[in-house]
Amino acid sequence: MRNGQLKPGCNVQIGTENQFILGYSVHQRPTDTRCLIPHLEKVKSQLGKIPSTVITDAGYSGEENYDYLELNETEAIVKYSMYHREKSKAWQKDISKIDNWTYDAEQDTWTCAAGQTLVFRRVSKEKRKADTKSNTVITGVQVVKAVH
Image 1 (cartoon, rainbow, N blue to C red):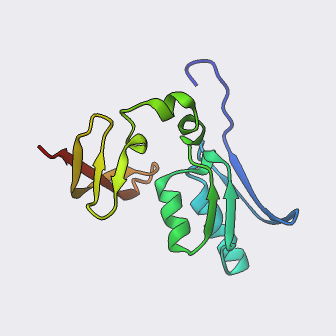
Image 2 (image 1 turned 45 degrees about the horizontal axis):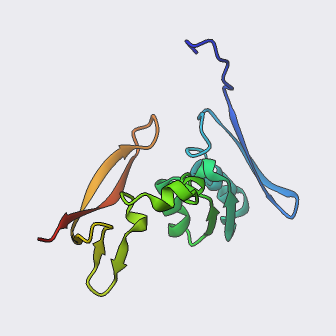
């Protein structure tokens, strides 16, 4: 590292159930986020299936991981990275956060703190590189416009 820090060269993942090790994997990826899917694929190759429930900390949160777990019909107990921020009083009082707006399911509209109604327009897709192998993840982004 150019800043003088030493970083580990490997990331070891271990999956357990009832204090028994089900599987382990070693990765040359620095973050846990990018290790979950390869780790579960290795466990699947060894056990013939992915566990029905996966419990992780926020380091494993990410849309690609959530999609993978859902696709494999695995119950995901994965705390998302913004969890603690969203629970703070400052976040809950911030009128710019869509979480603090009112949603009308029948009309599929949001109403902001200023009383403006916003209507769903479309879903756009965004490509992201998930890792150095240039895997792409397609994500849905809701775009809204104010109704006058």
